[in-house]
Image (cartoon, rainbow, N blue to C red; front, side, top):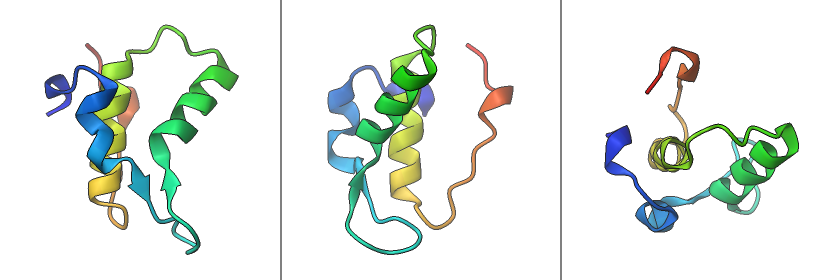
Length: 72
C-alpha cells in the first residue's frame, strides 16, 4: 500500500480529517508537512508520508502506526 503513493496528488481526496476532540476538519497533509519542516526531517520520503496520511484519514478513529519499524 505504501509503495502505491508517488505524489501529493495520490492523496488529494483523503487529506481532510476531523480532530478527535471535534471541531473543523483539518488538512492533515499540510499539518504533517509543516511539522516535517519544523523538525528539519528533509531526509524522509514524501511518498511514504502521503501513504500514511491517506491511511490515517481513511481510518481516523482507529488509525495506529508503528512507523519506526518501517524502512525502505
